[in-house]
Length: 102
Image (cartoon, rainbow, N blue to C red; front, side):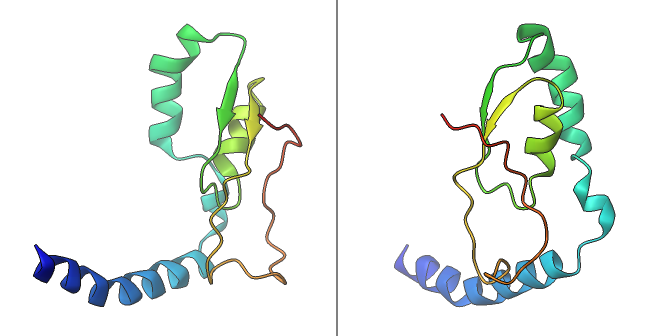
């Protein structure tokens, strides 16, 4: 068990660097919601909440999913954004913020 934890800790910086690189080089299509979200929403969520609801957007990045939900009458709280090296104070990429808070 301890060996596994040590191996994971060694790999983590490489995985984080890989993710940050991918985040910096993302394509404009990454501003569109993930197809899995759209399909799951239409099949499971929308029938139960036809008039919207409240969503907490955890680690939402640029806010593509929060924005998509807000367009469907959901109140989205994006407070739990985990900003690592991929989000710096000078980063001008948009982060969706509905202004609504839980």
